[in-house]
Image 1 (cartoon, rainbow over the protein chains, first blue to last red):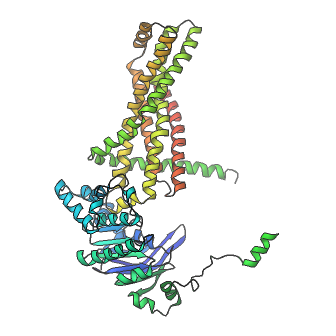
Image 2 (image 1 turned 120 degrees about the horizontal axis):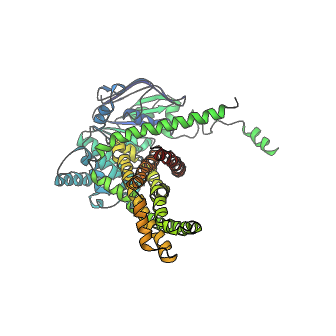
Image 3 (image 1 turned 135 degrees about the vertical axis):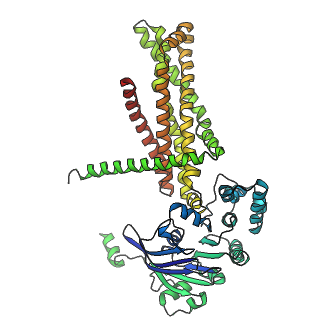
Length: 264
Length: 256
């Protein structure tokens, strides 16, 4: 067990984001966390990486309760984690090579030839060794995400977290990222946590899936089990139907009444 | 309830002052460790200092020229044009150098700092550093703060020197004040204490402007509008704080 969230509560400005969240990420597996936009998927990642702490309940990572950690402990813990951000979050004033080298330079005193070797092998793994001299502004969205992936794995993390890795990619880049996630997991023995609302893409690679809804886990199991769920809400999400327990319309006053009122 | 609004304004003001003070403490704690990467600091001194040079030198020249013109006109009424050198030097060293430089610094370097850090926040770069176990205060904020603090006194000094030559250009070359008198009067009347006053002021303004710029950027709301607002706040807050501190420091130096 790498991450274990038990009965977690978290609220922002009185609005509950999580109420009684339970979730387990097992070592060496690809765990998918799915859910409609705005259900707190990214917030969950912030909880796991100790950027925020739960109001109540317990969040454990690598067997340690995050609430009890000092800031030095948190930094030590994060060195075992790699994270891929939605937009890559590359440092805009450094080129591709230096972006990947950044964590190495910050955390080690390795000699320059070794850093070069390390960075080039990671860039080769994501197919972008040829782009080492480009600046982040010169990269396409898919390339930026692959560079960010190279940066995320350069320190050989035990856990790799992907925040919406498929958003805004063309079919080719999407396939590339999908393969990379699977490949990293198998080849490096990394535990992967993938947060996304792209059900089909996730179902193809995930070992375990959780469906997040209304501040808690609405369903869990393999992707196939989720699709066969009895719950209307789970089926709506998995099949992408417009109407169902999650209504198409944002809550509003009666349509006819409001239109007539506008006439007056 | 009539003073409820006033109370909340006071409360908000005190809260922000406290937040900035805490931020300054955190920043200072990271300043020493950030020196382990001197290249970052040199880069920021270049950014805040060298890249502000043109605007500082041009402004210094024109302010000096205006000072020469106005000073000559005023002193002539009392028949003491030969004091022009002293008047220009004291005006530039003690007031105009530090204050105008700080205002220009806030507009040129301060806004650049705020929008740069704000955009780094908005594009998750600061969060990415956090996740990579690199403290963004140490890597991003501290070098920029220190760079500004070091650059400001240098810029103010350059401003004053160029300004003096501007005043001399008008007073001596155009208005016919004797060159020797212009410089020797200055030499006799301006003491180390006056230079120190200017130095202390520009140092304090450097801390204030850099702190405000870095703080606003670091805590900017991560949206386009948020970064824009933070940039505006940097200029407004820096200008007001500089003028306020200028009065306080002037009064303090007159007392001491």
